[in-house]
Image 1 (cartoon, rainbow, N blue to C red):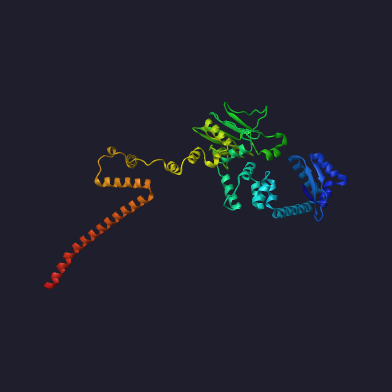
Image 2 (cartoon, helix red, strand yellow; image 1 turned 90 degrees about the vertical axis):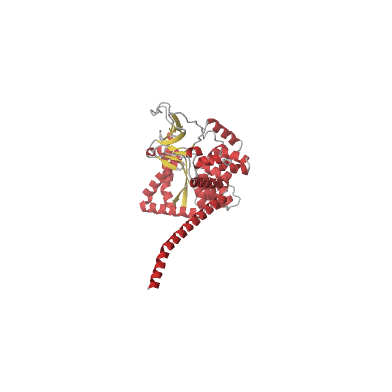
Length: 424
């Protein structure tokens, strides 16, 4: 719907509807003038068609209004429409603002009492995140708004392993919208827009091609608005050693890896299990592991296990163990033997050679401190305080000895002086 004043709508329609017919013939849209509403000075013109057709029709409407009313009148009309839009946004509720998002977001905003600003922020997020948020957000103790902010922050952190679960819940783990492709080999894989049959640009020898669908029939501007700006060679996925990397292949648009944009001169960027690549408006979710491990994880996911919540294989095994076993696993297992501690401190006695008694005592003290630190923090702290107290006592004794020596040196001088005074 396009809002126009009564005079502007008369200029657009023309005599006998000639202006509307010309608009429909040139752009392909279907234009229908809505009946006036009492108490409103603006009229509405309904445009039906594709996105590209509607954009072209709006541009033609602006030209007709400028030609019919003049530039100043058209500018005033545009300012009035902008002020009305701002007033409408200020007055709308969260449920109304969330209508721009996925299905169910408006009811979600109404259930938790979200304000319009927060609802508009959620509606701007990607569709997968919106659907996952609507399904899984269930605050227990905190206030809904505080819990929502914290939950949203957790979902936006990278790596985003929850997207694998979201794909399975949407039924698109291997469906029409999402396709799983195994990337391997020394040559790597190039990600870019799909190539036609007559396109001369192809992959290098042994290079894998991951083609993203872009409908060129929409036109350059509309295709970029729908699919994003995707180049034939947008980025490359390659393996170096045991790790995988993404390398942007152009220097203007860039490739988004885990929320940061990189270009060709930035070089290869490491990929983690759960990394997300943004190529145009496409999101590429990366799973990094062996083939058997990935198949096992997907089978467990189908069984209903929330892997990203638990944190992987170790977390599942930790849940089956008791709290005491879990504490030992986090700390590194059982306590080490004294021989191992001695090896950590300075090696076996045969390698260290003969040492003085003072060195041996210091070595024993260090070994005891290490043992006590591994067993508990209180013993180590008490041992450290005792040793510090001994050092302070030794320093006090040395200071007292120095004072006695000075007193001994000064005493004969005072006695001799007294004798001379008596003799005189």
